[in-house]
Amino acid sequence: MLTMKELQKRIIELKKEKDVCILAHAYQTHDILEIADFVGDSYGLSEQAAKAPQQTILMCGVRFMAETVKILSPEKKVLLSHSDAGCPMAEQLSVDELKKLKEKHPSACVVAYINTTAALKCECDICVTSASALDIVKNLPQKEILFIPDCNLGAWVKEQVPEKTFYFIDGGCPVHTAISEEDVHRARKAHPDALLLVHPECKNEVSRLSDYAGSTTGILSYVEKSDAKEFIIGTENSIVQHLKFSYPEKQFYPLSKDCICHDMRLTTLVDVYRAVSGTGGEEITLPEETIKNARKSIDAMLK
Image (cartoon, rainbow, N blue to C red; front, side, top):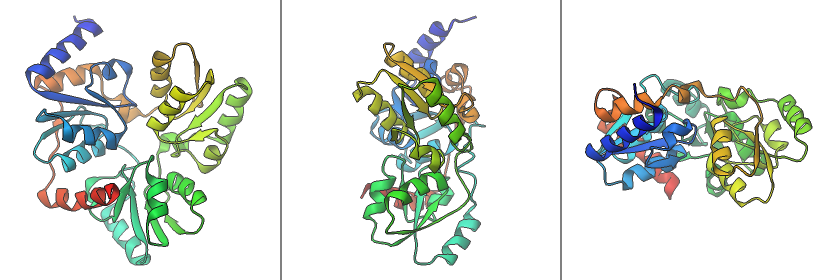
């Protein structure tokens, strides 16, 4: 029986031996972050994978993230650490449903949150991340925006770009959407001196009550630069754990104890070990046409 440290040491040895680059989304547990080559948001990780010299990439995250890695690095072998790790938001809208929406709003620019399947990206004009959505939508020439799939992130952008017309679906992250105004009032009462930092995947009424709303990396950066000593964190609760490790002199509180992504939590250190040893993980393959067409919306984002 191996201890956690012994298992981590074996993973590090194996990834060097087998030329594997390990990506860990920030919502993974801390024991996985410790053995990763790169930690961050989904799109940032796919960029790091494209630059990495390794020819095998292991994504410790969810399926759409591994697909994005494959789109940007089609020549590399891409593995997903756990086959069942999906994203409810990415799977809320089908290609046929999107085509019908496009017919209904023919003048709208189709803006896809990066949290979408590769198949959906093929039908979109441009991708955005939670960090880039506001700036990109502001600068689009189109006055009508069909924003998919997260209506909460879309509403947060809309509030700051009132000159444009937005169309949404009833979609979003079920974990972030479950956070309520009552959670905010309860947390503020319990920790009156703490700043409230939330992800814009939360409902708009929650984002409005925050001291800062932004991406996961934005929240981490805000804490790093802030002189404040207490923070209420309104995103996946693994971020609370990571911040406690990084800033033990500061206090961090979850906005909701139920803000837990079960798909992210599927991946364990043993899954990572099996993937790098060649006995686990799922290789992600996409048709060449899908890679080509999905890449167009990502390239548009970069421009």
